[in-house]
Image 1 (cartoon, rainbow, N blue to C red):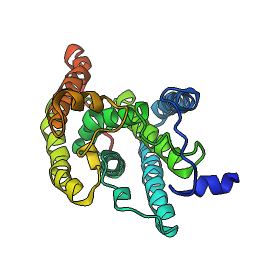
Image 2: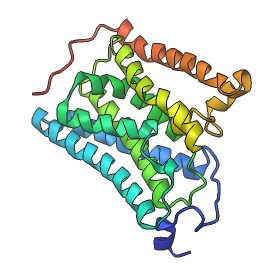
Image 3: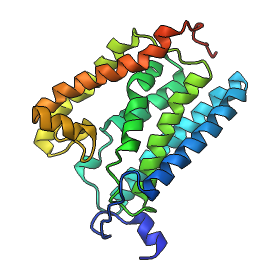
Length: 249
């Protein structure tokens, strides 16, 4: 299949080929995202404040544009399905990247650290799109958007804009619940798997949780896992006294 056709191909138009987790293809993408993230962090730290604001706006707009483009490609080919709706955690994180870039609010900043960052990193490590051709738009957009969201959250940390607080836990949990509770029932109605509340993502740690507690029992263990991750993420801020969060006017 010509490269251009491979790029725009949707499920049913190509022969699925599953690339191995942490195989050469997957690892190459992870290394590329890590390298570009380091370069972006160094560059961002050197920018003046007003340039950092402009950079985040452009960066967040690119993240959202990639999602809009993904939606349009499926829609224009008549291949749109209900499970392509932007209702996964990654889509919510895209929204908060955009909101923070243009509003620089504490709520978005806390969400991006406590849920956006670990969620995006988990998606990269346990990618569920490796059955798409390597140069397909869905594969490229998935690596890009999850890598970009991870980098976005890291930029706020390395620049001193974000100093996460335990006070951010309740608001982050409330936002997640606001989406997760209705989606749990809508998943049953639509046969979808938004927030992975219907079935675990194949190959992810959620599969182990399901083997232990069954379905939907794994969701309870998932909440425990999230709490453990949050405690680990809080340790640097609890052990080291940090200066006040930098305010960007």
